[in-house]
Image 1 (cartoon, rainbow, N blue to C red):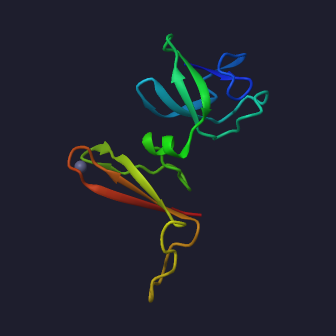
Image 2 (cartoon, protein in one colour):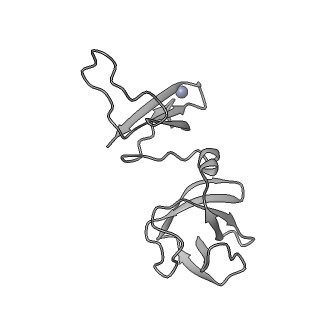
Length: 145
Ligand SMILES: [Zn+2]
């Protein structure tokens, strides 16, 4: 798969830089839309950085995608992409990887240590909720710096 990246942000008519998929990976896709991130963004493209989530659309030639813009927070939710603090850690249930439901970050919850707690999450911590598409079982994964 190849990605076309507009040289200037928002100039979807081109000119483009064409990049092979050894420099990016697909985080999620839904129909014709994809969210990708570059591990090795082309230095000649000033408007994007490595590991920035980018909203893309599949072109008629399905081996090519076009980078449209930086993905929004809303798109990250809609595409169910966790923002891992540590490495990716997707639990399994019924023999399959579970589906990401959503993420709770500690700036949205009480971060105070409960009274008597021996250990507690310090900032920055995030909790990732997953569900099984076979049995509706739920699991959470916690990560912190
Ligand atoms: Zn299950």
